[in-house]
Image (tube, rainbow over all chains, first blue to last red; front, side):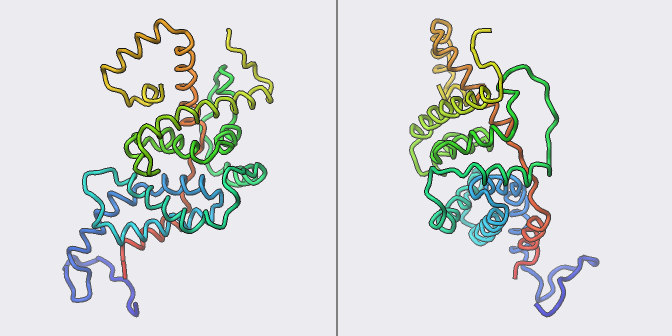
Length: 209
Length: 66
């Protein structure tokens, strides 16, 4: 650590202290396979910690661990799923123990959090007459976070992250049938919540059009 | 139902499911609702960019792992 990192101006490889070819290869592969999922991991971490600092810590720790155990990653399988699993385990070990009771959601906290970061990126404003589509990001976000964790989790992994049932089952340590039924029940609960929001904000929720 | 929404059913299952939908209004509505709910989540949850400091530190991790 007493020398600055070498710049790669001349391409002569393998100084004695330089990284081995093996290590170099691992780094490159890690970047291509794992680092590309950084934004997804960060977003997921935000969802589960609801705190940007904790999310950063969690992602950092996940990548440290992933790099250390990268050899045990089964090549050809979904690296994103592997990273999510590590992140989730880290979260359970580090954060959940001293957090508030599961299932209790602090709406003010969510609201503050959402406001504090939502201006960093906004999507296009779509015009849609469907009342569901009239709901704002924030309402959808709150509805999602009002679900019990076991439902919210599978919905996030499936609908936002696009994992397959098999990958989700592995991540949450449950059979595929359980994932399927949680998705089913979770979406039903979510719909009730969304309809409530829609009604609250004055949209017509009657089904017959 | 979920499996159909998520494209996790086999071709054969799907055929059976679709033919049931054509006869059952209740399931048909539920199927539409479930699809809609999935879409809402997919579209309406904002995705944020990771902070640059975090990106840098992870790049660092894989560039000069000491």
